[in-house]
Length: 119
Image (cartoon, rainbow, N blue to C red; front, side, top):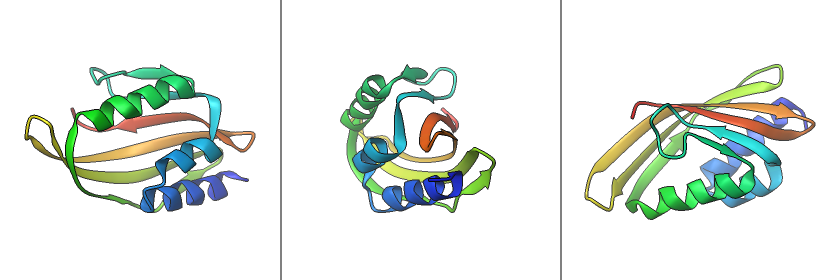
């Protein structure tokens, strides 16, 4: 799969809420995930750490209200996608998070994800 194919597949999975399939099919086992400075688990290396971060994030959520994902922009082996999440945390804080997600593809797998959002 080329970068455009990877981007389209990731967007399709996310729009369908198929996040596990996304990680299983599109990501390298050695992928690196980067969150903004000061975020929980700023840097994760490998799918085991990325999965742990996902579980921790889900556990702090009380209610999920919705999400949206825009169309990907591709340049060489990189692509970016805008995302929005609307949820309520367990301490009853309603949050609407907007972010830009940047991905790097190598040898048909995502090797890097880097998220940009306000804390």
